[in-house]
Length: 346
Image: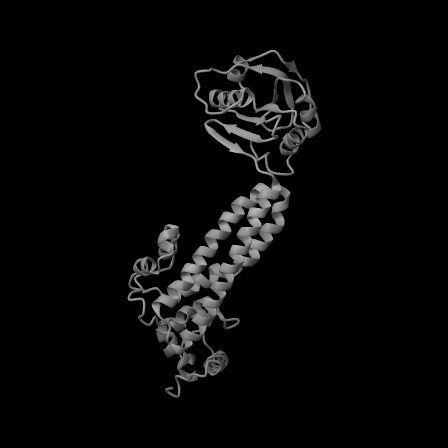
């Protein structure tokens, strides 16, 4: 099965859902092989029988197994008797499910068993057994996860807003920086889990993906700038190594600010973390990234950058007179908004 034919909306899924609704039961083998032929007997060969959900459901009324091709485009046989080795261990109950399990293990083919009483659909893939869930159950779980992502995003945004004000005041602690990183990483992990879950919704996954994209919008960029601003340069020449190490943390480790602080060399937690100025410069429209680096190299920290006179800004290669004036006005606005002024020494 080259693509997932068992997500809602796909023909095979529609077919087994029809069988489950009618409670006729079925045993369906996806693919064919000489080994399968060896353990098969009887049945009806179907020549040029195109796969449709309705045809699959109709053939399921017979007692034997149905064999479809690997791409689920043709129905090859119906009413087939399968006789796998009874030495293959299985914990399945019921003849149909034990047979499905053994056939899958013996042939390495995917086998579906639909219960005639409960309508439960089980997928056997070698030793792996999975029960298909209804779309409504998956959607309910996804919606709960989306609410969790939304709450995490709001907490992340609140922390970033506070970070912005404290950065300008130069009163931001390592712990407050780490909390932003922690919440952003957690948001990314939750979003990835929901993306994986949403794939099982098939055609209904599109709206969920749009919601996740919206909730994740800008988070990665913000995190990267926070890391560039606050990671100790002597330990991290660029943020890629830090991003990788953060991603390797377990959830338990990520939930510990102390552990995160140790990893990023941001200790003690109550020490002031002075930003370099990347996030502030990123919010200035039309300023190329190479000039961000030039300004940071020149002034070393955000407090020095915010207090720099126009003439000093003009000394940076690539900063013309007009842009130097615009930057000075931008810095003055930031300082005014938090009621603070480095220039006046307050």
